Image (cartoon, rainbow, N blue to C red):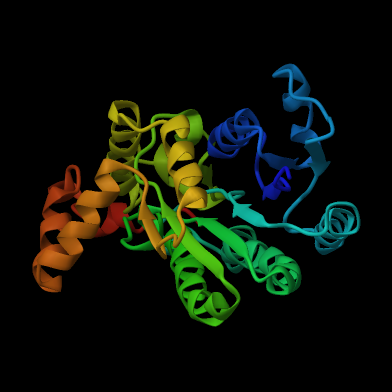
Length: 302
């Protein structure tokens, strides 16, 4: 008797890691893969030759839209008996110091990176509990275990995802449902070009009299350089996701890139005060941060 295909839902599947994961799972020919993306991104699948078929579904899903979340999950439940594997990949990164982030900026970052994946989890859990099996893979980040300057709100959203996922790990184990946080670090992709700025952070980058100017012009090229030099790719990280799916007892956390392994090791081995001091000293051009005169630093972007 042929084993029933596992139903996999991937969010943010039109580009980057989501796309690489979808393409890899389609090649496996043992999954029913549902690729989701916002309406404006759906045309990318057609350009790549990925079309709707018996075992590949392409569906519109803005993860922040409650009605769309219900619509997709209900269709899968009625036609495929529910989702077996949920891969929460959709998200984005906001680059700004805390002083350059408004309440609306904070809410939007949390809405996409934390609230939306947790909302999807809530919808898929009843079917997983009924089947007494499931896989939930939340794409986190090294930024979910350590924070970098100019990335405070992004890290906050990933820290929140990590905390909720850890709690969920305990809650759903009795039903043989696994929860895994995938933690990529620097990945050689175009992802860094899609980082969003707030109006204030965009102003600061162009204003050498702004007190945070040195923060931005130091961190931005540093992150881009680390991305370009990384050996990790969306495809190599996608293989980590497949390996996690295939494991009999997937772990709560999976370091998806070499630097993620290194940072996790440093956090475990070093006293916390040493750890933070070391990372501070390693920040690019940090000795120039905050050196503006009082008059110059008062010309802050609002």
